[in-house]
Image 1 (cartoon, helix red, strand yellow):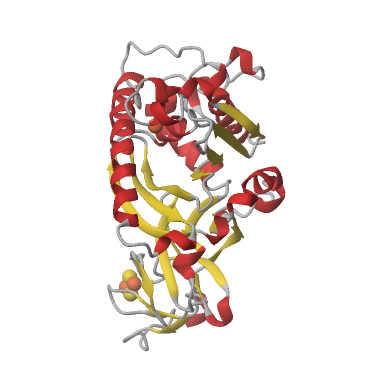
Image 2 (spheres, helix red, strand yellow):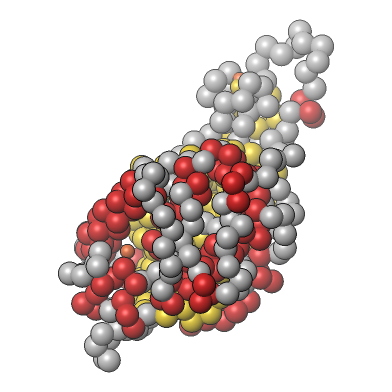
Length: 358
Ligand code: FES
Ligand SMILES: [Fe+2]
C-alpha cells in the first residue's frame, strides 16, 4: 500500500480552470510525492514504450523503464506484440538492453535464456538446485495496447482501455496518420529536472513568446495557440501558423507521459518525447523524430530535421533548467496559470484524480 502524498501537494488543484495555479514546490522535490506518483500515476496509467515501426519484424525489441521497472517491448512469434518485465528471474539483472532483433533473450549475467513469450528455455548448472523449476521463472507479461502507432503499457493492469479514452484525440489526428509515420532519428539526453517540468513545458505554447522568440514564435506565435480539445486522459494544443499560407502543428499529451507533436503539412513530420528512468530530479529523454513515409528516404532530410529540433530543444532545456532551480528553491510560490496553459491545468487535474485514488 502506497502512503498518501504528504502535505496536500495535489489538494489545491482547482476544479475551475479560471482558478488554476502552478503546483507547489513539493511536487518537484518531495521523494514521498514521487513515490506515490510512481505507483498511482505511472504504474496506473498508460505509458508509450515503443513505436510499432521499431517492432516491425519477429524478434524486434526495444527496452525502456516504467516507474523504475525495466521492461522490453517486442514482437514475438506469429507477430504477437508484448511488453515483458525484463528483470531476470535469477538475480534480477535486466536480461536485455537497448533495441535490436533476437530470437532469444539471454541474460548477460549467467546466461539464462528466455523465449520471446517470456518462458525460461535454459539455465546453466541449475541441476543441483532442489528449488529450481523453470516454469516458475517466466518473465511476467504486462498489459499492453497499440494505439496511434505506439505500443503502450499499463503496469498495474487497472487502467481503462486506452483507445476508449482517446477516441476524440484519434479523430483529430486521423488526417495526419500518426500510425503510418516512421522513425528517422533519435536524440537522447539526460534531463536533470523533475519529469513534470518537462511535461508542463511541452503542454503549452505560451512560452513561444519568450523561450522561442527567435524560432517558433516567428512561425507559430504563442498568443495564437489554444487548447483544441481535452479530457481527463489527454490534451491537444493547436498551433496556427503566423503566415495564413503556412501550416500549423498539433501538440498532444496523453497523460501522464505520452508527449507528441505533428505538423499539418501534406507530408507531416512529428516527434515523440519518450521519458523513462524517472527520479525526483531527473529522467532520460529520447526525442524520436517521426516523418511521413514519403519523406523518410529523402537525402539529408533527417539530418536537417534533427538540427532544427535540436536548436528548438536547446531553448526548452534552458527553460526547464531554470524552472527546476526555481521550483525547488525556498522562495518559490506557485503562480496563477494563463488560459493558454489550460492543458497544464488538465494535466494537474489528472494527477490530482490519480493521486487521490480515482
Ligand atoms: S541474473 Fe540473469 S542469469 Fe543470473
Ligand atoms: Fe518549447
